[in-house]
Length: 206
Image 1 (cartoon, one colour):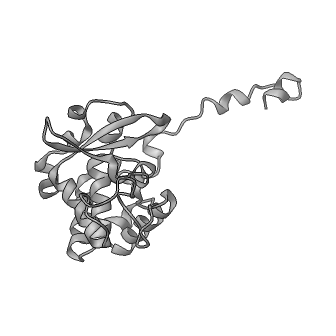
Image 2 (image 1 turned 120 degrees about the horizontal axis):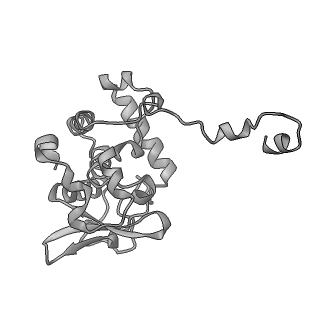
Image 3 (image 1 turned 180 degrees about the horizontal axis):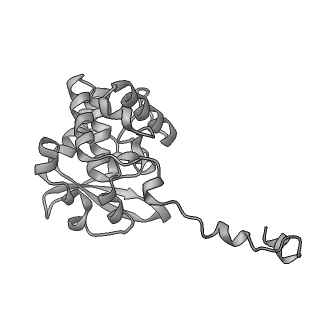
């Protein structure tokens, strides 16, 4: 369009309008997911005894990890800080930047529960280079497979609130807005967004 304007073929610089168009927040697809909906999902998958999906949703929610970050985790990325007596995940994010994500005890419980349900070695006995989370074939998830797997499981749950959504729920959906603000930076563990999730809101899951 710019070429057409500069060559005199058109008289209005309509190409400039392309750069000015923006979508109002209210007009964007409904991709947000609130704490109440997350809790409904966690309750549902716990009640039907599905530790795999439960653990994935729980870990994604309390860490704010991206889909790609979750699927590349290795056992050695789960580490223990003896000074603070806490576990944390070493995550490789965008731009090959490393950051540390703290894990509370219930997050650790979900990791152990996942590995037990898959029938793979407990963290303490596993090799460092083993995937932290695996498919039923023992391989690491690919981002696309994880997305399809979680989206399908949630859709099949048939929970009432899903009817009012304009988009499906996948791994990316659990990166709630308050978490995303912090995940754009590499920050110290004590400032991580996990500390924004209060027990009064997430109750037994935090």
